Each structure stands twice: as C-alpha cells, then as structure tokens.
Figure: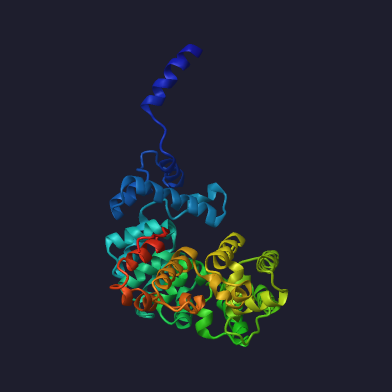
Amino acid sequence: MLLLRRHLLPLLRAAFPLPSPIHHRACLLSTSTSASAALFSLEDYLVASCGLAPTQARETAQKAFDGTSKAQKKAFEELSHSRLNSASNPDAVLALLSSVGLSRADIAAAVVADPLLLRSSPKNIGPRLLALRDRLGLSTPQIFHFLLVGSHSLYSCDVVPRLEFFISLFGSFEKLLMAMKRNKRILSSDLERVTKPNIALLHQCGVSVQQIAKLHPRVLGFNPERMKELVLRAERLGVPRSSRTFCEAVAVVAQISKEKVAAILEFLKSALGCHESEVATAVSKMPTILGVSEECLRHKIQFLINEVGLEPQYIVQRSALFTYSLEKRLIPRHCVMKVLLAKGLQDSNRSFYSLVVKGEETFKLKYIDCHKDSVPGLADAYATARGGVVSSAV
C-alpha cells in the first residue's frame, strides 16, 4: 500500500497541479457552493477588462488582495465577504470611472496606481466621483490625475469638501495636485479638528496664506498639540513670529529633532570659530541651514574659505551661501569669475555673495553672454563646471 501511494502521488500531482496563489485566493473568496461553478480570477479579469499585460495584471491583483487584508485588518476567513469574489463590484467601479469620461487606458492606469479601487463601494465612490465633475468642475484629465495620487481619499472620506478647502488654500487644483504628490494623505486629515486649527495657529503667528501653502503638506496634518510645540521650537531658535522666515523655521524643526538642531549649531560655531549669538543670528536669517548635513556644511565652509578666500565672519553674515549647491552654483560661478578676473574683465572687489544670489538667466547674461567674443569657450566651460567637471579650456 505504501509503495502504491508513493507511485500514484506524483502522477496525481502532475495531473492536477496546484493553482497559483492569486487563483487560490480567488477560489477561497468564491461564494459559490457548486463544485462545477466557474471560479472568478481577478488576474484574468484585469487582462480582459483593462487590457493589462499578464504580469502586470498578476501584480495588480496581488496588491488588491493583500491591500484588502492589511487595510481592513480582519481575519483571513472574513475575506469571503470581499467585493473581489466576482466581476460584479469591479464592473460597477469601472463603469463609474468610464461615466466621468475616462478612457480604457486611463482606467487601467488608475487601477494599477491603486488596486484597492476595485474593492471600493460603488455606492460610496459614485456620488463623490460625479461631484468631482459636477460640483468642483474638474475636467476629465484633472479627474484622471487626481485618481493617480488621491484615489484613496475617494473611498475613505467625504473628499469633495476637502478638495474645495485645499484648492482655495493652494490657489488652484494644479497646485493642490503638486502638494498631494508630496503627501498623498493630505486629504485624509480631519479638517475641523486638525487642519483648520493648525492653519489658524500659523495665522496667529503672522504666517500668510501664501507661506502656509509652501509648507510641506504633511505638516498641516500634524496633531495640533505637536504644531504648538513646533511653533515654540521655532521661537527658541531666535526666529520671531513676525519674521518672514518664521514659517521656514517651523518647517525645518518639523523635520529634525532637538538633538540634531543642537548638533548643527555646535558644529557651525566650531567650524567657523564664531560666537553662539552669531550662529543664532545666522540661523534666524536662514533656518533652512539646519536641514543641511554636517558633511555638506563642512565641504561648503572649506570651499568658501580655502578656494574663494572668504572670511568666516563674512560667511556667517551671508548664511544663505549654505543653501546653494556646490556643484550647481558655487563652484561653477567661482570658476567663471576666476577667468574674468585673470583677463581683467571683472572688478576684484565684487562681492561673491552678490554673484551667487543672482538668478541663472541674469548671471549668464551679465557674466557669460556679454563676454562670448572676448572669452571664447567661457559658456562651454561654465556648462562643464555645472556638470561637475572643472574645465581649464579658457
């Protein structure tokens, strides 16, 4: 009997191979009690209905099932009530997406971006989806781009009032879309208990709507108590609420710990040989310094002192120099000035800071284009330097 079992088992396995994991999950989710009933395969459905390639369909289906389990945090057996047990719910969702003008390719892209759309409730997302068009006046392309980054809010909350609020705050739907790309959960925050109190607090500190709109959108979703703490930390840096840089200070301390702030302040004091009060003044003028790593600050200080010849005291007073990239601005512009000075085409007393802060087009017009005849190759040397290679072609 044992020998017979060993002989037959491989044959049975070959005749009835085990199903794929996704097909197996679809089998478990099927509510059919008939053994002869056809089993629904989400993978096959995505290929047929959305035109996805088999590999992409398999990955999307996997995310739809895994996402359902993680999002709902239910025991596995409760998945038998999932909306992915047949084509009924996905069909209804795709029909809704089509009703607002999305093409088959658009719908496929939206489903791939967020497979959980397929298990959302048509009764919930239907009115919200139509309101994007009829109440907010979004065009079909705008709805499509919203779904690519914000579809989660479509089925997790009453999204339209939130969209109205944030469009007003940021100034346009396109600007809101950019904010959503930085923080996809911005629309999930509680407007009345979280977002609006945070904005009101910043208003009390003299921060304008335009400045608030430039904050990382994640900050607006912080617990209001944490926001109050961030305001106090910004003030302790010596940045008054009335300062135009106060909002920047809040944004910086939201990203780094108290210990990190203290370490950067100590490093600057040591590397530049200046007093604590001088460092505090520099930070109050340019709080974003605190977001630069010690290694990067060290390289910039060494370059500004050893290559450009600036005094530490001058660097402290012109703290904005720390915010510019060595490769994209400081080194290339220094190379241009060395060439022009060597040829007697520039005054040696010109401030390096005034040179650096000029916009790119203004700099090229004033220091490169006007010398294209007298210094052939200067433009190419500048472009090479911006690419990370210092050229001596001129």
